[in-house]
Image (tube, one colour):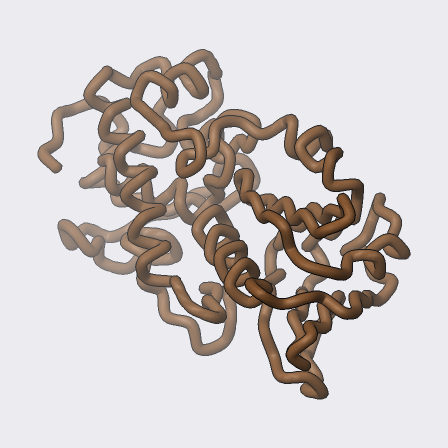
Length: 275
């Protein structure tokens, strides 16, 4: 599932593909990708891309003429750049460029979202207003992370995935950051010591940086896709040896999602850990 790094890469790719180009036509099928939005307005998204901003897992695109688009990749969505005349499986929306190429928004499971709106309204949309701190855009100090999570009684991993607290962290990178920080996912935020908040905030930033370096390219491959390789330290590795200590990775359901952790590297109780 796309999380902050994958959405960041998608945004960078769109900026690169659209640089110096004009969208001469935009078209889309009537699918649930446009649920709650006016699909007919998508065809007006022509001309040059003036700006692109990422907030959490959302992309905010502004085209000339004051036209805007809010995009969310959902579970399987991605933007791909193809030669004109080449059919693309699961293409739900398309930008035709003046050089003959086409940018497709493909989404097999249709959980992605497109909402064409006036560019001036993009930041005022409810979904954007509800987002918490974006670690890459806003920064994330230990104090800021504690302020975002410290008062909740939720489990640490569940709170970390709340987009209203920290925008962009999903199931995969929450598990990875907690492993890197040596923190059990069921710990309560109120139990964390200052040095643990410091480890966790840095682990989130380091995990995102590693993912961006590893996945940067024209078309990142999601873990669930055929032919993908699991390069994560703990996510998706239940019953396999821990990549750090060799203990068997465990999993359990937490907040309706599968959580992966190493019982040795991530003890339930607080203890010091050298990084």
